Amino acid sequence: MSHPISDRTLYRFASGTASREEGRTVVSHLLHGCAACAQKLGAVTGFSASSRAAQAVAHAPATPRRSAPRRPATLQ
Image 1 (cartoon, helix red, strand yellow):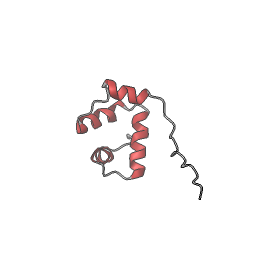
Image 2 (tube, rainbow, N blue to C red; image 1 turned 45 degrees about the vertical axis):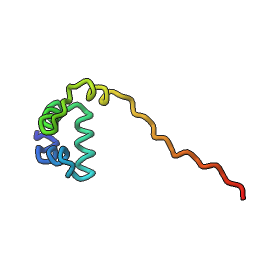
Image 3 (cartoon, one colour; image 1 turned 30 degrees about the vertical axis):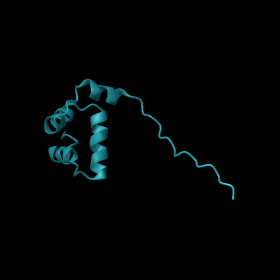
Image 4 (cartoon, helix red, strand yellow; image 1 turned 180 degrees about the vertical axis):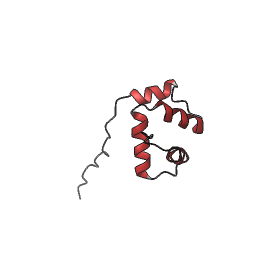
């Protein structure tokens, strides 16, 4: 079985030239814990997936988006 993320796609992701769909696929793949891709990405970007910051982000709960505060109605 071949790896679901090609090196070419991973490098496009690292350089910011991947399509939106490719980016989502790579992020999902990394979040599922592929150590091989995390290591390759770390080598390209200089970011270590084993760093404490990366581990904190990977295990942080998702935060809900806040909606913009409503403006008070003005009386005329």
